[in-house]
Each structure stands twice: as structure tokens, then as C-alpha cells.
Image 1 (tube, one colour):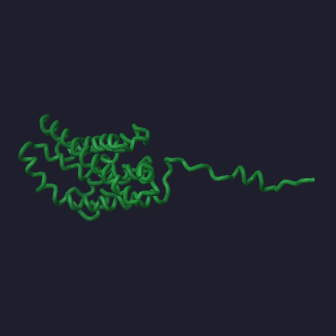
Image 2 (tube, one colour; image 1 turned 90 degrees about the vertical axis):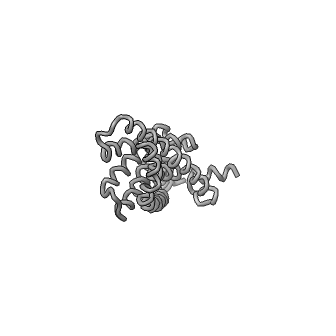
Image 3 (tube, helix red, strand yellow; image 1 turned 135 degrees about the vertical axis):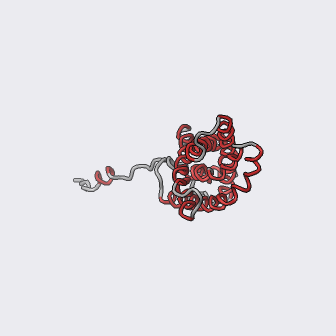
Amino acid sequence: MTTTSPYSSTSTSTSTPPRSRFQWRVIDIVVASVIGVASGLIFVVWNIASSPVTAPLQALLPGLQALGGGFWLFAGVLTALVIRKPGAAIYGEMVAASVSALIGNQWGALTLVSGFTQGLGAEIVFAAFLYANWRVSGAVVAGAGAGLAMAITDLVLWYPGSALPFIVIYTIAAVIGGMLIAGVLSWLATRGLAATGALNRFGAGREIAKRV
């Protein structure tokens, strides 16, 4: 007579379910945090350099200085391109904004408001693509979303009551800056990191490996 182990059915029913591609891993949190902190340090430098660098643009056409805002938008897009999980854009931008605020800048705690809205602008775009478009087109549109969010936030917080021409120019410049700096440069940076093998445990790294 054969007997069956009392643990056979239990082991089958308690097997580990497959991990969702949207579920964050420990390495996702670690790498996203590293990207966010590194981006925040770049934010700190740009906090100081932005005014003298963009002053000629503002003198040329008021509102055009928003082109430089892309350097405050790339953290969310870059983190999302690497991690490829829901919430990555907001997380990366918020970590970077927190570093900027903690080190100190001219905007204080409102930096966190900007970080959240800018990250949300990129996040909405990636979500609209169902977190499936990690090509340069997706990065550019996400950068545009972050730029639009930045323009809305800045116009409400720092430029209330501005004339319509300024609002239009500032918004267009912010979107373009987001597309070029947060979008294109973040996509190129992701490909560069992937080519070194640093992202082999991420989708971006595996894509590069398949093409080599």
C-alpha cells in the first residue's frame, strides 16, 4: 500500500507566486535612492548656477529662462527609465528634491512641492503608456509632462498674476526644456549606464545585452 506525505499538497498550495513586473524589489529601492541622491546633488549645483546661466535668456525674452528648468526635471524621468515600475518617477524626483531642500536652497520646503508635481507630471505619462514605452519617444513625452507640471507649479507659486504672454512663453520653454534635458539626456544616460553593465539586473540593461 502506498502512502502520501501529509506535506505534499501543502507544499504545492503554498508555492511562491510569481513576482509581478510592477512589484518593487529591494535592489529597485536601493538603485532608485542612489539615482535620487546623485540627482539631488546635481540639483544643488544647478540651484546656484541657474540664475547666471539663464539670465541672458530671461533678458532676451522674459519666460525663456524656463528652458533651464529641465535640469530640475531629469531625476524622475531617469529613475523611471531605469527602474521601470509604477511610482519610480515620483520617487526619484522626491528624493532629489529632498536632498536639495536639506542641503539648503532659496525655495525652502516648497522644493518638495515642486519635486512632487514634477515627478507626478512624468509619472502620469509613463502610466498613460501602461509602463511599457521606455523608448526615446516615451522619455521625451515624460519630460514634456514634467516640464508642464513645473510651469504650472512655478506660475502659481512664484509668478502669480503674470501677463498672458509670459505665461505662454514660460510654459512652452519649460516643456521644451523638459523634453530635451529630462527626456533625451535621461534616455541617453540610461543607455550609457546600461552599456557599462551597471544595469544588468534591470530591463534597460537586458535590452542592451540582447542587441550586443
